[in-house]
Structures are given as structure tokens and as C-alpha cells.
Image (cartoon, rainbow, N blue to C red; front, top):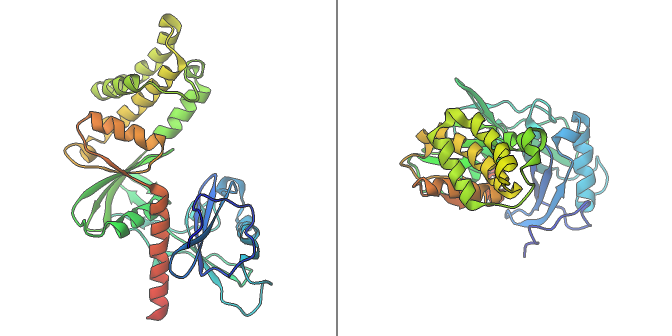
Length: 325
């Protein structure tokens, strides 16, 4: 029987030693899944000890502190080292140790390409999964490739061309074919929304929450019809608030619609006349689904967190297979 996947802990209680640890170490957050040998979740740990708060020397103590009594006592006893398979920013240049990028076109890199940082505590062995890059044009992903690996592991029957969208602070549009990432593009749409909402003149007329679905769809259509005028359209959010009393919830929806619409204008080659799979089920993913549906596309959404874990499980299976061959 598995534990509640949404349960969070600052330190794990005593229990049987896990078979392995799955880790998604992002910029602002760390997620750990304590796993048994059948890839069932024993417990889940979340922490705000993301890459932005750590130096290279801090990663190992952070892991040990969060895992607590889940590991055998002592640090150098003659026990089996527990594998920790990690995706995300821990493998970046500013992270624990750099895991060099694989170059597209390529399958999502797995355990064979992982970097192993030096570990002092003999109870752990850590594998940092690489990201993927393109050089012309220059683009990178780190963490999303593990979600893609999980998606492919769960949808292995589809071998033809596919398009997936990964909404986020830096959203990704990815083309897949025969299990390989053939190309991708990154957009700073989420970061631009946060900056404009919090630090521009629009902060006076864009709310932190609330929504206006009609205004969102209209803004998407306006950005698609004239993406070069995006800067003027953004200022009109402010002008309408001053002159016509537009509420801040409508301002929020318009800002989101204009930025997502501009992104969709630049990605017509990805979604036009094609089905799209959106990796995400949160409010942002639903915005992309609404926008694409209004354009005649037929998107489907899948849970991104479960795909991250599926991708890490695929890497563990590769590790197990390599140890038995």
C-alpha cells in the first residue's frame, strides 16, 4: 500500500531503508519520493531548499537531513548505498555538479549519461540526469527531458511525430519522433507575466488572482492577429483601467491572454493542424488548453508531476538492468 502522494515532511520518520530515492531538484523547490524496489512510493518529501538557496557543498547535507532515519545509521558502515536519481537544476552549472547536455535530436538522456557527484556519506550514491540542448538556435532544457521520458514510457505505442507543450515560467514546445526529441523552443512567457504583473506600470491594474475567461480569449485572438503590436496592446490594459474602470481581474486575464497569444503566434508550426499534449494540470496548463481549443486545436492534458516520477523510474529501471547484465 502506498502513502498519500501529497503528504509532505520536514524529516522522515524511522522505517525500512528505501530501495532508492527519486529527486526533482528545481530552482526554488526540491521534491523527493522514497521508493521501494517495485517503484512504489513509500513517502514523499517537499522542501523549499531549491538550487537558488544552495551552494555545491550544501546538497549532500540537505539530502541527509531530509531523509533522516530512512537511511541506515552511521555514514561509513558496510551497507548498500541507496541510489538517488535526480533531475532538474541540481545538475546545472550553478548546481551540485554539472551534468552536460545531450544534443538534440536525441532520446531523453538516461542513467548511462548521468553525472555522479562526489559523495562523502557512503550510504548514498547520486546520479544527476542531463538536460538537452540545441545549438542552432541555442536553446536548453533541464528537468523537462525527464517529464518527456516519463511521457514516452507511458505512451510507448505512439512512434510517429508528436508535439508536446510544457507550460511554466519558461514554457517549452517540443517535437518528438520515434522516441527522440527532434527540436524544441523555449518561451519566457511565465517570467514575463510575473515581471509585468509585479514590476511594471501594469501592477496597478492586474490582480494576483481572479479571472475573466471572455477577456482572456479575446486577448489571445488579438495577439495572434497582430503579434507585432503586443507592446501597444499591453499598455492598453493600463489605459482601459484608467478610462473605463476595467477591473483588475480582467486586467490579469488580458495580460495572460496577450502573452500566451504571442507565444502561440510564434509556435504555429508546432500546433497548427496537429494535436498537442500539454504536460500539466494546473491553472496555467488550463489556460493553454483554453487558448488552443479556441484556435481549433484539440489539446489533451496529462499530469506533469506523475510524468516526472515516471521518467525517474525509467532511469532507475535502466540502472537495475545495467547492474544485472
